[in-house]
Structures are given as structure tokens and as C-alpha cells.
Image (cartoon, rainbow, N blue to C red; front, side, top):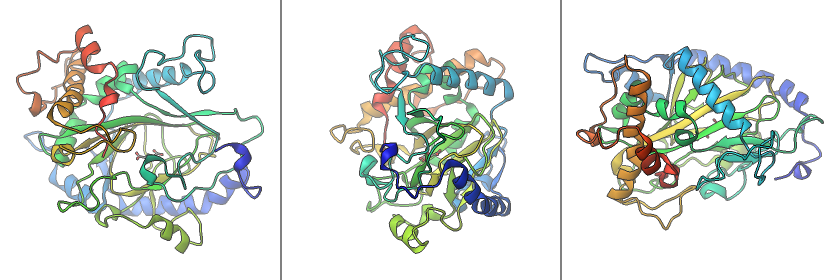
Amino acid sequence: MNQESRPASAPTRAEYAADMAGYLRAGERRAGEIGNRGPARFDGDGRLHPDILAAYWRHGFYVFEGVIGADEITELRADANEMIERAPVRPGAAVDARGRPALGRDYAREPHTFIKPLSDPWGGTDKLNGRHPSRMTQPTPDADAPEDVVHLMYGMCQAMPAGLRVYGHPALLAMAEAVNGADFVPYNDAIFVKQPGLGGSVAWHQDGVTHWDSPDWDEGIHGFNFQVQLYPTTAANCLWVMPGTHKLGRVDIKRRVAENGGSDRLPGAVPLICAPGDVTMVNRQMLHGSFANTSADIRISLTFGFHRRASVLGQRGSLSMSADQVYDEQRIFERACVIAVAIDARRRHFPDETPFRYQPFAGLEAEFAFNDDTFERVIRDYNTKDLAI
Ligand SMILES: O=C(O)CCC(=O)C(=O)O
């Protein structure tokens, strides 16, 4: 996609922002009505409260309010903003905007993905297993917009000390255990960066690609994603979800858009409006997406997911993982080690917190303590072992 490929009829950034206002207000009303949000609550044994679990399974999402404290958000913002500043000055460059070596020259996977401002990099393409069949509206950016903007950042457990620590957050891991079982395993992580007036869209899609026709298919088989919100999110810049769609199997997205007169403003969608420190949990089978950020507000969402072990064991790589890879016991273990190291990194930084006990690593804690050795052995290039399905 380049700017020249935008239709001449594309609205300007300002026109689009004005035109979206009614849709955004209606979404805010629906979000207020559906609720499905509140502080994380656990029972006496540290298990996620059954009412929250039921609410998650009913609608396919939940907004956990105030999970990450203000000091930790400050650390996460500092690390995420440092990561943005250390991006190559332009795609493919070896240096950042200040002439320093760009982050990631020694990483196996490039940590930054760039797009054209306000564009939709995936909609209507066959990228990522073709799961974004319909292109979003791509407004024309303001004349002073840069050529390219950072859209996604990968490898937060390696690049961001606070990112590794949040990966070991006891409340988040207890939620993962409640939804996916005690032997839950990681999926991947990606940071969505939606710069004010520049951030691109993410076309309507369902995340899962592996199990739609599986005889064991059910509403949880493709796992879920968390998003830790570093800044307030608004209807104009946040992720939107279509409640209940995690129960439907594969949704005919093209048809939904066609039945909506070709408009990407699908009826019934709910914006996940958050305060900094709120964490959303979204079922990976939910129909979801986000619009170009023509607003004045940044969104940075640390996105990372977890699966049932049974959903990944024996499966082949998909999405950004090569289909040549098979997720066998060893591979799952190697990626799950990141959780064990993250828990220990967190324990050292927050000594007053009770660490999460990750059952698959019970008794192996000393082997996966956070130190220089495990950084090299486990954390370096860990995301080449993501468990995408
Ligand atoms: O946050 C966004 O805008 C998109 C997130 C998303 O598509 C995902 O988590 O799968």
C-alpha cells in the first residue's frame, strides 16, 4: 500500500474524523449498556471470580479495570516510547532518527513494522492467512504527515525490561489459567502503536486460523489476547469488538460489510474504552478491528495472548510462523520458559507481590531464574518460537 493507491474519493483526515462522530457515539452508548468490565476479582484460592469468567464467555471479551498500577505504567510507557524512538529512521534503515544504531540490528526478528499513515496494511490482502478480507477506509493524512509510521513492535520481553515484567504479572497469569487451564501456554506479543492523526487501521478479522473445522472446535479453542493499555483509549482510537461472535465459527466478513452497504462501520460493534492500566481480554475468535486513528490521542496497546496447551500441541505454524514448524513438546516448553523467567524478573522488581505459580514449571523455578544466562538462553529471540494458530 502506498499513499498513491488511495482512491481520489478518500476523505481527508479531518473529514473522516467528523464523519465518524455519530458511529463513535453510538458505540460508546453500546459499551455503556453492555458493561462487561470492572476490577479483577479473585476468590480465596486466587482463582478468577466465576462471575467474571461467565461474563467473558458470554460476550467474548472483558475489560479489567486498574490492573496495572500507575508506577508500572510509567515504566512501561518509558520502555515503549524508547522502543519507538529506537526504530529505524525509515523502513530498512540501520540507524534511528538520532543516528544511533536502530533497535533490533542483532534481533532475529525485526522489531518494528511500518505502514503509511492512516492506511490499512492487511485488509483485502492475503497476508496473515487472508484473515482480513475487507479493506477499511483509508483517510488521506495531513500534508505534513511523515512517509511512514511505526504500526507494530515485536519482542517486548526482550526489548523492554518492563515488558518482560508485565508478562509475569500474577493477576494476568491467573486469568490465563482460569480461561485456558493450569497448563496454559503462550501465543505471541505485539505492541499496536496508533499515533495521533497517523495510526493505521486493523481490518475486521477473527484471529484464529487453525481450528475452524476441527472436530474439537469450541468457543475457546483459539485462546485469547490481552491488551495492556498505556494511555486512555477512546472510541476513535481503540479496538472494537463484535460481542458474541466468538461462538459463531468462521464469520463471513465480506458479506457483513456488503450487507452494511460496503461500509466498515459495522452495526453492533463495541469500542473497548479504557483508562491507562486497564487490561482487555478478547477471545481470538471474536470479530474485531480498529479504525484509522484520525484523533488527537495516541494509543499504545501491549498485546499478548495465551492458549490452551491442547490447542497448539502437534499443530503447524501459521500467521507469522512458518508452516514448516511443528509445535511439539520441546517447542512449547521453549516458548513457555519465557513465562517462568518473566515471573522471576517481576519478583525481583516487586518483592512485596506474591508471584504467580506457573504449574508447568513447578520445581523448575531455579533453572529459570532471571539472570544473564536465561536472558541469552530464553529471552533472546524468544519470539522466533511464538505459538501462532
Ligand atoms: O489493537 C488493534 O487495533 C488490533 C488488535 C488486534 O487485531 C488483535 O489483537 O488481534
